Length: 121
Image 1: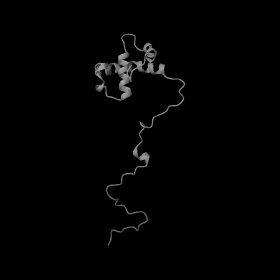
Image 2: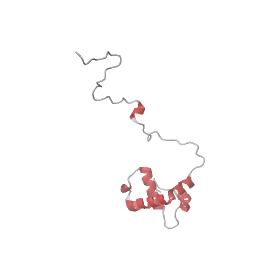
Image 3: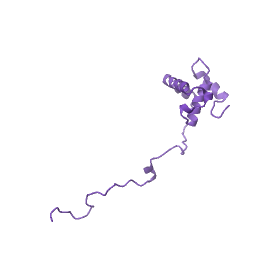
Image 4: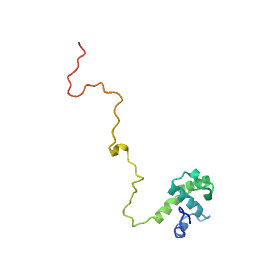
């Protein structure tokens, strides 16, 4: 078993939830590879087959609700909290106290508390 592929036990749990026709294990492993590595579909390794065929099948299954059924069935009902890895959570620079950009040229308005200017000499 390779790093990003389903174990035999996981495959046994997922297999009954998939469409009846065909052997879908290589396809599911290809989808997991893309999701876990973040690689674009076009860069899918050749061992998974034609990237475009895998992508089209993924889209068909998404539209048919197959992935929703699978995720609902394998979801752990005892999970009461969600833990996020902070290395993937990004905040806007201003949230970290970054300096705001200053205006390119100073304002023509008089500073607060200054005497009014007259246009007469």
